[in-house]
Length: 213
Ligand code: SAM
Image 1 (cartoon, rainbow, N blue to C red):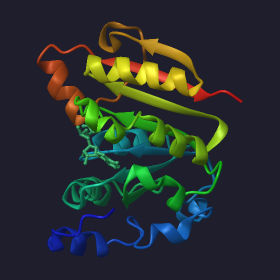
Image 2: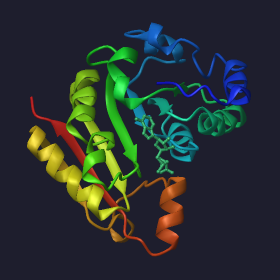
Image 3: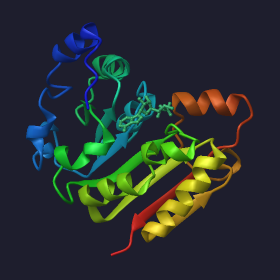
Image 4: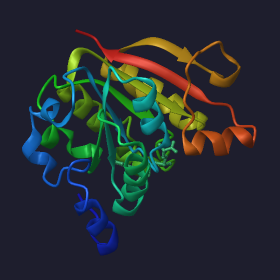
C-alpha cells in the first residue's frame, strides 16, 4: 500500500527517479542494475527518517542498501539525506514490508534490518508487527538461504515477542544482546529512535537471526 494523500511528498520523490525508482515492482530480480557495483544487498524495512541506512551506506561501500518506508512524507526525509550524500549504493522505496515478494525475487537479498519497529502492543494488532509470522514469511521468500535478519528495539515486549515468533517459525539466533549499548558490539549506528530512547535511559535489545536451511 502506498500512501498518496500528501501530493507534495509524492512530487518530491518523483523528482529523483535515480534514487527513488518510480515503479519498484518492475525491478523484481533486477535490483543490482540500480547500483554502481554488483554486491550484496541489505534492506531496511521501516527506515523512518533514514539516518541508519544512510550512515550504513557511507560506512560500507561494499554493500548495496535499500531503504523501505511506508509513509511517503517520511521517505522524503530519507531522500533529503541521500540528495546530500549522493551515495551510489543506496536506493529508496516508498513501500510496505508486507509486500516484499512484489518487489524482490527469491534470494535477491542478503540481509533485512528492522530497527525500532512499531510495537503494536495489543494482541489484536499482532499481524502488524514486523516480526509476526506473515512478515517472517516475506523475509524468508526474498532472502538468500543464509540471509540474516538484524533487529533492534528498546521495547522489551516486542523483543520477547520477536524471539518467540522467530523461534516458533524455526529460525536460529546467531547472537542476542540484552543491553546493546553496554556490550562490546562494535560499529553500532544509532537510528533516530535509538538516540531518543537511549538518551532517556532505555535499554536497547538486538538480535541477529537466520532461517534454518
Ligand atoms: N527505524 C526508524 C528509527 O529507528 O528511527 C523508525 C522507527 S518508527 C517507530 C517505525 C517506522 O516503520 C515508521 O516510520 C513506519 O512508517 C514504518 N513502518 C511501519 N510498518 C511498516 C511496513 N509494513 N512497511 C514499511 N515501513 C513500515
